[in-house]
Image 1 (tube, one colour):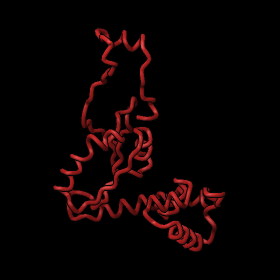
Image 2: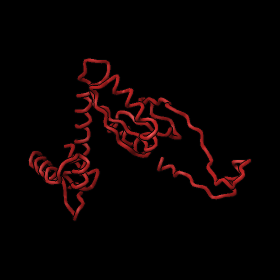
Image 3: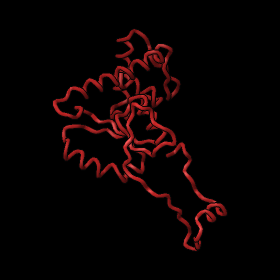
Image 4: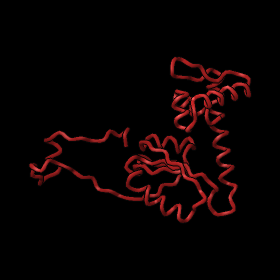
Length: 191
């Protein structure tokens, strides 16, 4: 089922194979086995891309729920205060470089038996992955809205905004420089 979900989400057998570190033939075999198991073809090929059939669309959401429930069951089967793992962590690219390495170093020194999978993405994409329960936690830029009550937010770091200019600029008033010169700004969809 997991391979089927990856194929649909990535839109390609080859991409799903790369993502799972398998050969495309192995992915195709897994899909054929799932098709036989449910008694229906779940994917349609169109050139190098694939899309779910009507049956595949119906099965997709239930497959995701079953996989999440199986993850939750495995995570609950622990003799410690921590879930058994794996920990599915999302992180923005800057967090992967600046925060995650030191955090993982401390994590593995305290919890060497719990595997960690890291999924990079924008804050918006990671937030969506949290809501669909595909991630256990994510390091992202705080959104401009309140989180649902059943989610917890923990501030890790505050960072000031900086204005970087060519050396020739004599900056005495930051707002004046921004209002009179072109500047590069992240689009909200990319953070």
